[in-house]
Amino acid sequence: MTVRRYRAPQGDGELLIEPSISSVIHSLLNDIQRSPAYRTPGQNFARQEVLALAVEYSTKLAQWAGVPASQISAKLKSAELNPDLIIATGHQPEWFHPGVLAKNIAAHAIAQKLCQSGKSAIAINLIVDSDELDDVTVPVPSGTREAPQIIPLPFFTLKKRTPWEEVRTQNHLKLEQFSQNIIETLKPWQFVPAISALKMPSADHPSIHADLEDNEHVSLSQNDARLCDLIASVRLQWERSEQIENLETPLSQVTSTRSFQCFLLDWMRNAVSRCHAYNQIVQAFRDEYGIQGQQRPVPNLLVVPAIDDSASPERLPVERVEVPFWVWNQPEAAASVERERLFVRHVDQQLELSTSRKVIGYLPSSPDDAEAAIEQLSVWAKEGLRIRSRALTTTLFARLYLCDLFIHGIGGAIYDQITDRLIETIYRQHIPQFLVVTATLHLPLGEGFSATMADVRRHQSLLRDLQQNPWRHLPSCEELSSRADLNHQMLCRQLAQLRQERDLLLMEQKICDQKADRNLPRRTRRQRNRQRYLRLNEIRSELLTIVSPQIQKVREDIETLRQEVAANKILKSREYPWCLFPVELLHRLVTQIQVAADLAIQK
Image 1 (cartoon, rainbow, N blue to C red):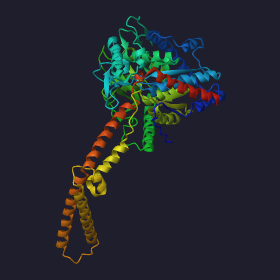
Image 2 (tube, rainbow, N blue to C red; image 1 turned 90 degrees about the horizontal axis):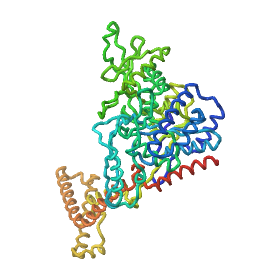
Image 3 (cartoon, rainbow, N blue to C red; image 1 turned 120 degrees about the vertical axis):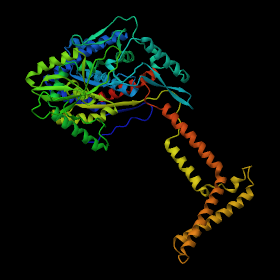
Image 4 (cartoon, rainbow, N blue to C red; image 1 turned 30 degrees about the horizontal axis):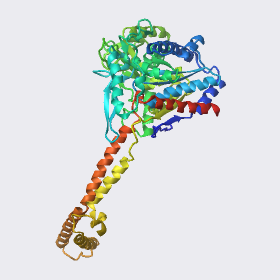
């Protein structure tokens, strides 16, 4: 496995795009020209399923947000949902920083340039609503440039970690107040955040539902809205203002498709071999990157004893094997729920599905009974059972079946090197491309300070040397003459005497170390060493009083530097939510990425 390391841009307004948009576009065009029918029927079917859901969800989300529907949706309906190329990206439905927003911008820009090259291409954003919501605040800077601080502003109330798709809100006023709180907190910085021009969906908007399958649906009603849809609707307003027309679909919709259920069944049927391959590949990644521990970048899949094997007492119990999917049951009303690991074992021509605590149910294990298995999965889904992909299997499915190019941020790009090896080892297919895109934007909080941690460490080293070796830092007689609290002439004579005495003591010590006085009794040598040591300490203490102003000054400098370094972490952070930024800065980011895409076509 080739080690590829990525580092977030450090400077304000800097982009990371790797490989270049030019090479990605040319590679995509070459792939489609070299083999016009390079997709399998299963891949084509998966694309059509997901695109159909994305068109419906995107259209209704746009209506709900009060913005024009994407022109892409209309084109896809008339083109039988069969574009030449699909560019995908995805992220949790949180208030993410502009570096994540850059992926959406790049997906749109690349799709547009591919269309200009004569191919039909669309961009789609996967809303990873199966991830858990645990932090219900966003960091907002307050204070002054010299003494900034972070105010965590809450946008929701949550008692316990819960998957995003299960979090619903009936109080839009809280979210509207959240916007006002941001605006008020940022007022001292004298800029207007983008969220001031964006609105939560109107409280008098009619109820809208994006139907999935039968009774399963994503609610877009203002009376019982999913929090992730609300946040997506705010982002959609800004994207439409910049003519960004990506399709959107929640992962919870994608996992309801027949294609995903086939993907899930295939993994469960081959759970033992997949578990072995998965763990080997993850461990190879750890070895390459020097990662210690078994939890990073992802935990190993487990093999654990069966919960209950009373049904077959005549033979040894078959162990349960973990598969890389989450499972939970839809909670009651506003209750919270935690995701659990999913385990599988083969029992009497069936697949037993379980969590770490209980058996969920059974599916036919034979490929010949796939229809019955899919039907049972659909029944469970209607009853509220959620089976969702985890991080690696989400991008694995997207890259294998859904898209021709997946756009990652830095974290996802590092981990998707594991996905590359999974595709190569398990599926033995051509590895689809992925692109790494991120950006660093700083809020206009004033110039940062020049102080760095290196400056702090340098001054700490100077302080230690002043305290341990004050004679190295003694002021000259001219410098002492400026100190009104000292008789500098007498002090100069005293310093000269102390220096001379210290030099003599050190010379004696050197002679002793060279055993020139080895003829002296050992006790005598020890006494003399002790006397020299004590006198050197006395001289050091006397000299410390002379350099005490310097020591005090260095201590004050260290404190100032620490404050400036701490201020820089706030002033120069790249982690602020995109909605805090002025629209002018966000527009500049759009322009930067569009220019990069324009240059790609010209090459």
